[in-house]
Amino acid sequence: MTRKSLLSGLKPMHPGELLREDVLPALGKPKTEIAELLGIGRQTLYDILSEKKPVTTQMALRLGKLAGNGPAFWLNLQQQHDLAIAAKEMAAEIAKIPNLNEAA
Image (tube, rainbow, N blue to C red; front, side, top):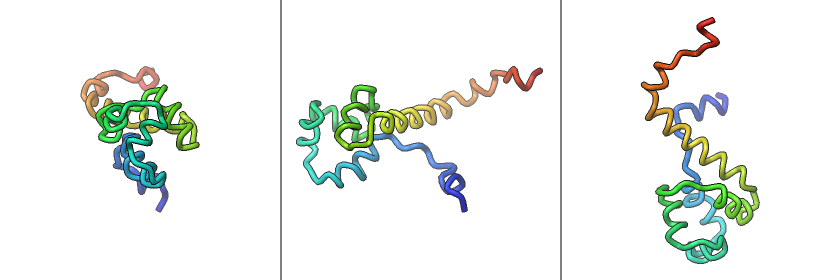
């Protein structure tokens, strides 16, 4: 079975889920200390971890540096998450828009 078929149907994860479930436990530091290391308030970190706030470009720079995987990783996670939500919310509206390549 291919990776694509295994993952089809799964919604893209919010970056906060990855931080909460994998990254922070691997770092082994309290969330308060992580917030300090990132140069942000504790509540901001908690809002991202609880998926209430998105990862902004500035936050992606911070997380990319802390985790060592670069900002693009975090921005891509956020973008895929946002696209999945928007596609679901706008499905009926988008379905009404013609594809000009198909109409020709």
